[in-house]
Image (cartoon, rainbow, N blue to C red; front, side, top):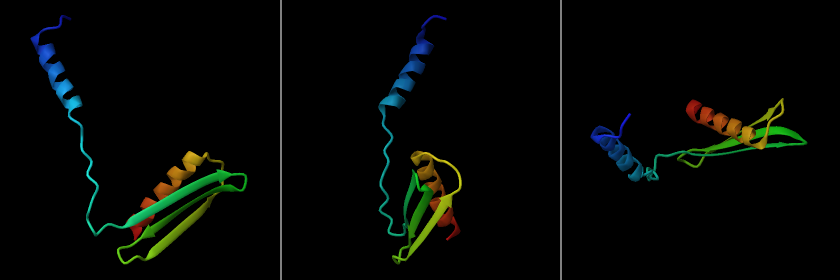
Length: 90
């Protein structure tokens, strides 16, 4: 395949898209709940925890002990999943 005008135009479109950064805006909505989470994997076992905070500053702590081996990263993923699940349920 030869590089022709059609290829150049497609390249320019992709180049323009990649040069235009996506902007993430931090929400300023006062109706937002907060969620903190953490997980740990060590000699004492594997545990995860999350705290959900409401608009009225009510705190809902959740924790769980995992009955199988995990790395620290996997425990934190599980903790974030648990926190999101609790947020949806409340």
